[in-house]
Image (cartoon, rainbow, N blue to C red):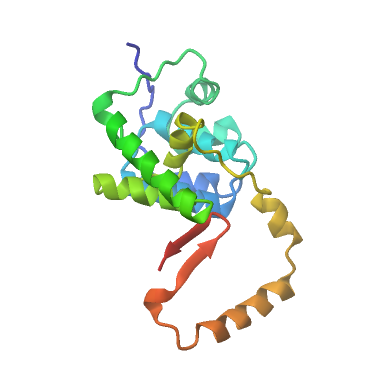
Length: 205
């Protein structure tokens, strides 16, 4: 079994990661990725690069320059190229480091299918929340991608327009109009009943 070699002499710095990628990444996606790194404690350059690549493959932002990603991940540019393109690297996940065992993943799939049977859909956030509750841990914001891919026979993602395109079509007067409308709607509503929603789905406040 081959392991990824990470020729990095510098210790990963989350602040450097955010500051370096801020000019080239969608701010919301950068915030989500950085939040995942903080929650999971990931400092491995290969894992960081793959996390950025997963978000890129969802169409949330343009591919960042390899030199900038290398600087942000505290590693060499050749490592970024090899990990991003899966060239010459074999990353065999050990069973003990996987989030869910095969049996646990089947149980999660059963729960997911039950929800979709009742509601017609399930959000990525809900899938991550279910997985996190099973292991009493925080799940990375892109973990659901691998889960869906592994169970593509049973569930398929719904393709939506890229968020950048939708945001470019949004006019400033619409933002204020919905803001004041939201203030009126929220009056008198218990805070426990407020739902936090965005393009990625929703979660309980």
